[in-house]
View 1 (cartoon, one colour):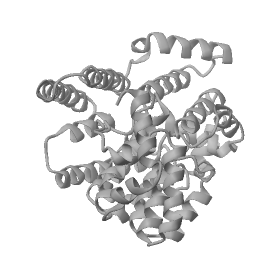
View 2: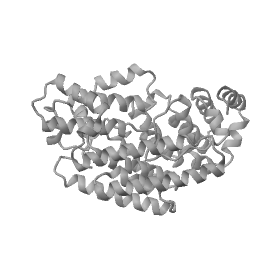
View 3: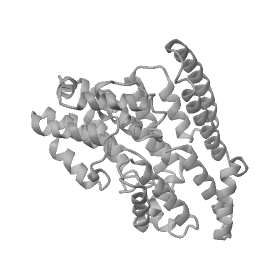
View 4: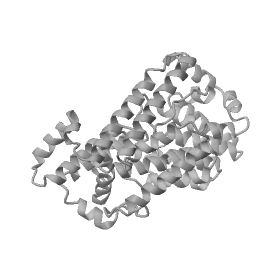
Length: 383
């Protein structure tokens, strides 16, 4: 979840709480003003820390994007300097406000340590953040279906920002998944959300500590995928899938993990229980299905599934046959600009599974028209 989404929502909720007599029109004016001058509304330490993190996060990603055309040597040198400066900035933020979970999380991700050490640090941060949230008295519960107690959800119903902010958060989350077939589907999904789902989305998306905790869990799911801890990855992904108003692809992580575990029943149950994934236009679902069927020895079905992936997902054949570097998520999957960005992410996340599946890539290359589709994509986008 981008700071540009949750930090303004948090500032608006904080301001509205301090000024309960605001009219709906005044609230909209405040939200517009926050979008232009957020520092004016960041009076408390936590708000200032969140705003500082948002700026550091933006600088980090803009710095990385400017390096894309550099030579390997220049890239490594400039990236190291950028990471060092970013870690220093994040350390200052976390020292001022330890409750800025995202600052601490990205600092962990940027540390040059072995993956197992990184995962251990993430687990400690997740445990601490979860404990602090559950003891805060604001109704957060990691065991509740949508992470909020009934009392907290009921109280949110009277919040003057609930409808406007809650619906915008649901809309952003639904549109970001990449599983919906058209933009209108995201709006319809948000409009049809129940009152409690709307309240949960509002409470989650306006609380930077909860968002930071969810980011930490999502990083753990990704870390477990990279280190071949597939059952743990599936467990963490299922936690993320319970969040409302939180943009994520956790169902994709779950499907890849279940495919690697050859859990056919679990894989298709996950697809059918998730309306977005059931549309079957997700690269995670389509690639996971091909891998699952191949690993189960059902080559005829796997062949059909692979063709579905290659021809329904932009760049599917290309990224499968040509492993292409993807910048690390800092802290979670970034918003995408092109449809093929999603395919690139899915294949990159499945890299360990593909490498662990003997002859899968060679078999895929032997299937008629896969190689041609890969080359056509490369010509189209200049790869």
